[in-house]
Amino acid sequence: MPELTVEAIENYLGKPVNDPYGRRVGYIVSFYSDPDGKVTALEISLGDFEFKEISIDRFSFDEGDIILVPEWEYEAKKIENRLERLRKRAAALEDLYAKKEVPRHSYELFKKKVDEALMKAREEAKKVKEMLRKRQYELEDIIVELEKAMTSLKISYMAGEIPDKAYKAAADQIRKHLEHAQLEKESVRKHLERIDALENKPVDIGVSVTKQEAPEETQALPVVVLEG
Image (tube, rainbow, N blue to C red; front, side, top):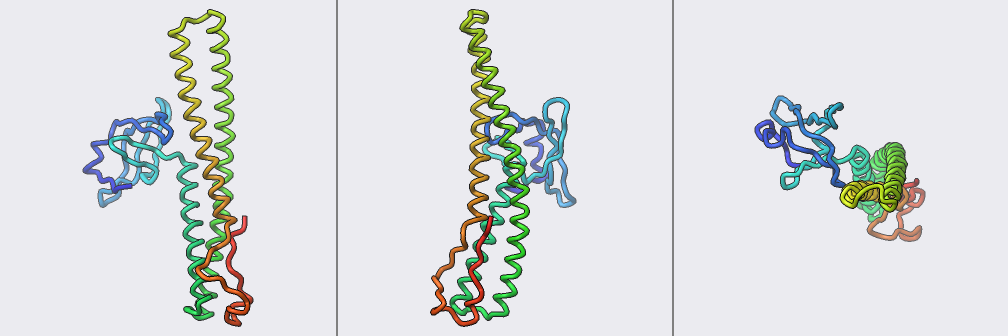
């Protein structure tokens, strides 16, 4: 996101904050900054009873709209970017070594670093996937609750217990919340699938190296594979 300074914060104080799925999260009530005047976090009112300091990294400012990325999505994107970057580094290293453009000692040094980083990334990915599954279960419960509420509302309406206007207003609210929950659930699913794919997809290198083509010292050094 663009850098936000204390000189520009007046444009956002008191403004509403939404999530990427169209739901109102709260309002910006204050901010925190470093000695250089860069805003590092925003204080958000969540309803009327909860207040939370949230890192500026989780916000985006799009044509006047202030969007707060959910924690699960923020963490998912971080680990996806890390895994993708490490896959590219591993592929570049294997490609260079296969072409004999780096000596063995440099290859082994950097391979060790990449492998260690991949191991840490996999551990982090495991935690992130647990967070995603937890949110998935929460959204499933929300959807079930909303569908139950809609069923009760329809029964009362069909029985003539509530008028058209009241039914329409209530039903529109339920449909809106259902749509938001289903959109978020689909997003969670896609992130879970992407993390799994990045963990399990073999590293691609620019050339195909066989035992006959590879230098003798590379034959005992297989291409790095991201395991789930």
